[in-house]
Amino acid sequence: MLPRLLLDTHIVVRWLIDAKKLSREQARVLGAAVRHAEPLALSAITLLEIAVLASQGKLELKITIEGFFDHLQAGRVFQIVPLTYEVAAEVTSLGGLRDPADRAIVATARVQRLKLVTSDQRIIESKLVPVVV
Image (cartoon, rainbow, N blue to C red; front, side, top):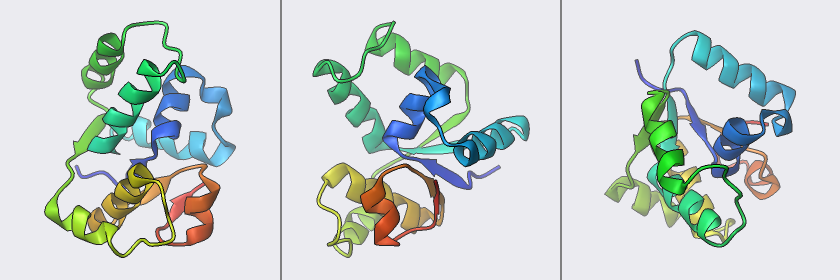
């Protein structure tokens, strides 16, 4: 089964650490995906963002980063989508977004034709990709 949804970095972190911070619609679509055993896509850059946030003390984990990544892998819920030539080329058309990770995530959603689960207002307002907010 192929994923239909790509999770923005902050969404996956919220979902795994404090799901109450998700919007009602975000919680609904993620719960439905899990109930139907649908994989959820994560851009490879999300793993890097999580590691950087944790190393800078901006993400407080109750376990090590290795343990956190082990938890991500063990559940088999997430499918990591690599950064490809197509994604890199798509980034060039996303001038409205400045953050390189956001650009890679949006480009991944566009190339893979996935709906992006996000709370990032800049991404939402850009209308570059369909979103679940």
